[in-house]
Image (cartoon, rainbow, N blue to C red; front, side, top):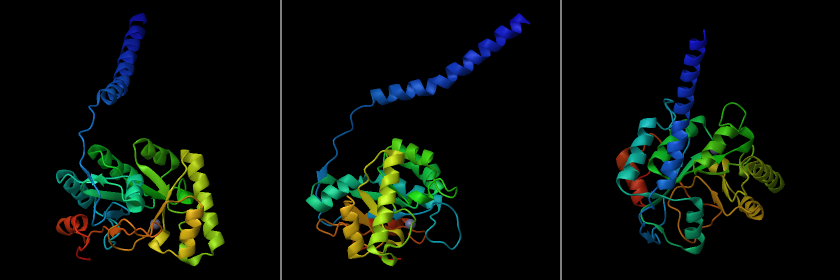
Length: 268
Ligand SMILES: [Zn+2]
């Protein structure tokens, strides 16, 4: 009987040791990480493509739901061609202060906080070391159909920027200034409470915006607000009406290449 107890104890110890190993090697890997090679910086005269993604998955006849294979092909293209996905802080410094950014810049944004942003997008961005931003409508978080706060916190810890997509995901164009201000206030408060951030970036639900919505965002401390108007984001553009580039299944890799290399890309 006693020998069985010892055997069980030995097996348990083995499991514990194996369970600990990844954490230890992960920490060591982080500490040993070589400093990144110096990336060439420049002020992009033509602007910066801000790519707009929604759900990743397979929903026939819905161009907003991008096939996972297309998404992976696009990220691989960016990596293989030495593009540099930049943060919203870097985009702001360029758009408002004309500061240089890494060459071949691109911004990756993911709207609505779908579960696949956690399960598909985050691992790919981590693998490539890409910056990315997730715009979450904060009310929808923890409602069962979108990301929950635990997942959002993991994405934040993985280095992604989490920003506001309003509170209830209602159109800014169909609200009075006061209601819209309330939506921002609630969203900001929840991001502060859950993630301990003072959020500075906003994405208009359905893309629609007004001058008064921009004013309300500015008053709430927002520095850039993103639309669905097509085109590249340039220095001197209205920071409360940042253009973005649609990415759907109709965008094949050749058209994708155009979208990230020229502001005169072919519309689809
Ligand atoms: Zn949305």
